[in-house]
Length: 272
Image 1 (cartoon, one colour):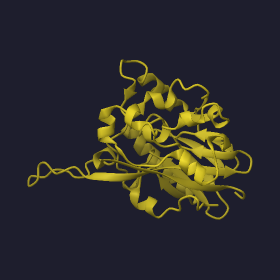
Image 2: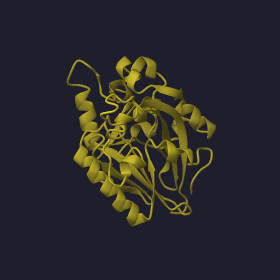
Image 3: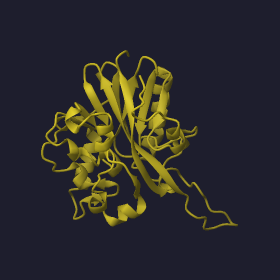
Image 4: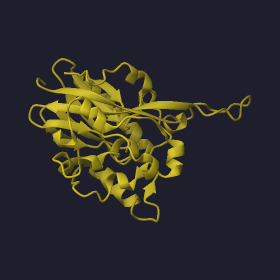
């Protein structure tokens, strides 16, 4: 669609054992029954869409700059944010402040995607935070039913009880404006929101976020990640994305694919 452009905002690097991303990346053998972990560096990013009617739409918002005090030590040990890049600094490089964002879409509420929701407290975007309904129901539930406010990769302080933040739950796939679609992806969590952007020159791009981490998961055949809420849902979602890719003759930009990310344009460069 004419008039739409998007920027990829580089938000640094988190690291982890590859076993969280793909099934059995280094399986044991008789000769080597205890192979070492494959420790990997993963890009994290947000997407800023400039839309002719919606204005500026931000998809995901990265890790909190307060992660060392906000995340439990166990999470810091498993998924350290080893190259820290502040979202507000990336926005400033484009001459923008949080007040300049019109709509915030959070793919899911894990710590590396939802960590800066509080940055938009009281803003227009803060009053329009879109998240999938199954994701919100699950994340708020598991972080409120027990003594520990942090469960898995959910950090309660990232998304809960933030003054000036209003969530707009999405219960089904939808076109939120001409040229911009959201779709719900079961698997990694109960409902990761993917985003489809239709541009005039680049064509259609599908952003999966962690609905599909990388080309290793996409296959074929699909490879289920170690961190997965619903393995059958994940496999079904891979096929769903394949259908969307064929339907739109689209490119698929994965959530944490180092090789693919290396070749993508980063802000201030853009796609249109």
